[in-house]
Length: 159
DNA sequence: GCCAACGTTGGC
DNA sequence: GCCAACGTTGGC
Picture (cartoon, rainbow, N blue to C red):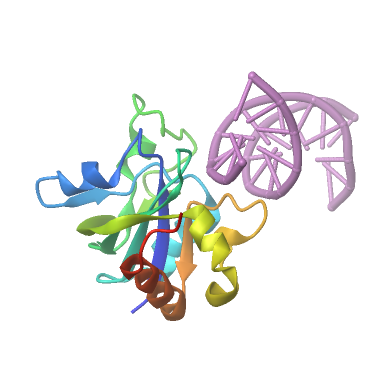
């Protein structure tokens, strides 16, 4: 079993939006970055753990837990001319953009902010989220990092 | 609103 | 294949 962190802007799609989905699942569409796509296409397995991260908001941070809920399949928005994610260069016979479904598990008891993660950079070790200039929207998380973050959840919020 | 980082595009 | 221009991400 592997672990992941997936970013979403809460104004576009938040952890609460995911929780309110009829089956708690949502196709993770709109990813148009090859590295992020490759994680979904090549490495994700049903049942993998997902840290749901709110980006581009105040404060950014991890807000919930989800899991991978489907095998990878073509992103339908790439073929929808009315979608903002439409990609005329994606051939339906050889789809360029691949996604998985994500399923809601639970919200964290409290938000673990990016700042708090930075404060524990030593315990987290080499973490893609904390690397300078990181813009990747999907990244791997080690079992140790996963455990460290859930341990932080149990502690009182920092000042 | 600013700006650093960085991926993509397109001219050559 | 190089690289400047441009667009996007996302923290601050």
